[in-house]
Length: 427
Image 1 (cartoon, rainbow, N blue to C red):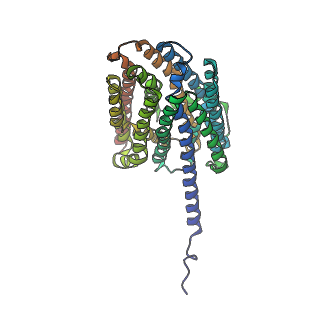
Image 2: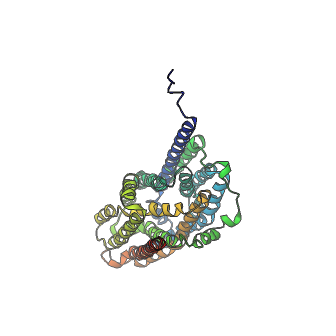
Image 3: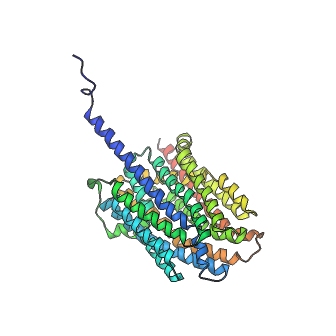
């Protein structure tokens, strides 16, 4: 008598398939959460620097005060990011994601209602204390991914981030041309919808048996950074990550005001340019990243991306017409692959039980950049804001970004070359 197909089914295989399906569904839910979160933030980006100008007089003061607002946000994010990352290792990813959504809702609402510059500061404080979605989402991706496909999962997170920037800045720019407060009301509504979605649909990714106790030492942002720099196996990559992040923060902090000062761009114009940035990021991170890593490997992908970024930073600073910025955005496609590749290399060298703390530490490093860099970048932009638009010095912030990116490229080359030589000697 022949056995039926059901009788030949292996229960272990069924459980494995069900677990894999659950992980895939969970990752997709988190990708949607990141997209909605970034959509809300994208709405605000082309408008907030212009909104600051409503409360001050002169381009120099507008640049200075916007830099201070960005620093306040970064300082609070720097202090709270490792706390939230460590908390996600103790209580799970889902509660921390929900907390982040609520905090960002109040951040945008306070900004929309702000009658004074002080009220804008209150919104930045609330936002900085709750901006944890990216680090916890990255930890979630680590929970549900294998080491082999972790870079691809990080790429999907980056793609969801980019998708938010495809729709958000364009919508924010259009709404900002109507009313400067309108994008923040819409962003607050999206955060509320995001919370409802996450509360009912996002499952927990971290089993209770894999959770670790919360400790102030691990949640201390300075201890978190010290833990990164104390690891000789990834120390060089941490420095590379820091320099790349600082260069990106300098670009992000000055992009809207720079284009407004030099080319006379409105919130709508800046929103369209950021649309192309997001579209390029999605094409690379969602469509090309897996293929690039398979063909070239994570090391080569990261190196090529770093080199591309350094060249394009110089090109941004030398641009003499607004249309040139679009050309350089498209020419900079490969730089969007460097971040996920570097992040995957660091992640693979870390214990799975420490992924939340690791991502929180890396985000703390990014937050440290948001604390230090905006004051420098906007101060530099303020100093050159009165120069003629055809003066090459007006692109000084981009040139400084290019210098940092070039140093990062050199350190990465030395780091990978040393490791390659060590492996060769060991064999």
